[in-house]
Length: 182
Image (cartoon, rainbow, N blue to C red):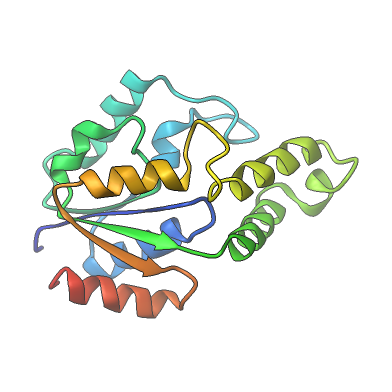
């Protein structure tokens, strides 16, 4: 297996996990998602964050000394110690309306239409999540936003590939592999 340590990042709903899985399959390398490290297991999911030390330990255990892996998601606010491992970072840019549509569809599958509909048990959380995701480009939240991501990308010591994540996954995979010379 050739060395290929790729990090796929972007706003929520930009397709980082979809592209990460497809690249990992094509490379016959493991795929990891930062959401699985950032969030402690809960039912329903995504209710309790792990503390930073636990995230760092867990991600370190997953990536280890592997010569190849694909990591999707965002770690710009807590995972600086992993940046030297990246051979390339791929940043997916997707129009806000498309990202929000993807997120709403994902939540309908994940939680069920009734749970997130008005009056549903998870409606308020769903509405708040979509509002947070919509504000990414405007940078209205202190956490993850385009301005912070852009600053982080500008400081990376590795190659950064910027892609329009609204295209077909197959085309994105080809472009990543060609740019990374894999």
